[in-house]
Length: 246
Ligand SMILES: [Zn+2]
Image 1 (spheres, protein in one colour):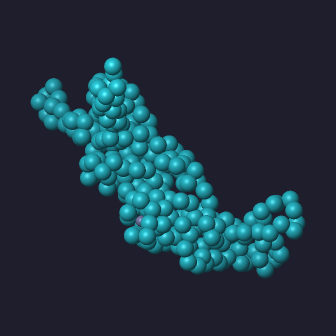
Image 2 (spheres, rainbow, N blue to C red):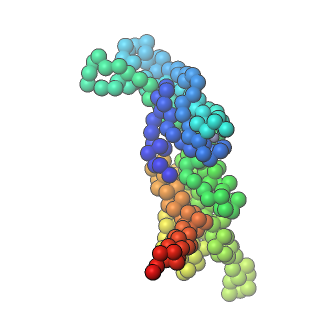
Image 3 (spheres, rainbow, N blue to C red):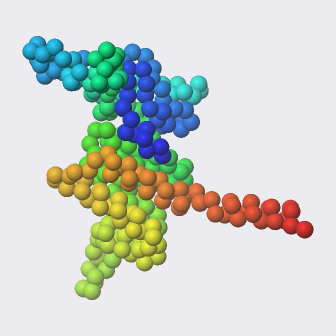
């Protein structure tokens, strides 16, 4: 995951090199015509002020996958401002810079190994779609994916209490169970759970920076579990030893 790609702003002719979620091979680049219009509020302000630099525009832009066998088109919505390249120079040219508010289809923010169970894959992909739209709901989706990850680890969802009644374990209790076998990994997943809890709260305050932290952790954990390189590296070492050891 290249974190800076998700905080970069777009211009009329440039789009961050997000990975195409359709083919998984190509990268997005700006394509077609970018349209931008002043918001009604900025239009009204324009009538009483001649400064054009603080006015807000709503933007529609397009991008295309660089893979010639794919060439999927992406629609991007955003909002932004005209800004001078050199703010202190009155003669400096200005350009439109905008922040994405939605992208369809949504590119993948992290790479998900192909052998990740379907519900985890689907929840993470659903969370990507919410990244620009609703950060709290995005965090809640990532949190839900943890439940399925714990299923994969064989952590029970229910337990029988002292009265013989079946009780559902909440995510925190399940992570505590997992902590007994994998304390290091469990503490990382617990951090994602806290973020998800904040997102699910009525006045959630999750920002994109927090989401990117969670995605980095998740990508690392998934790689560690579903495509560990240790056996591969051991095989390479054995191969070298057999071949070259005198
Ligand atoms: Zn593609």
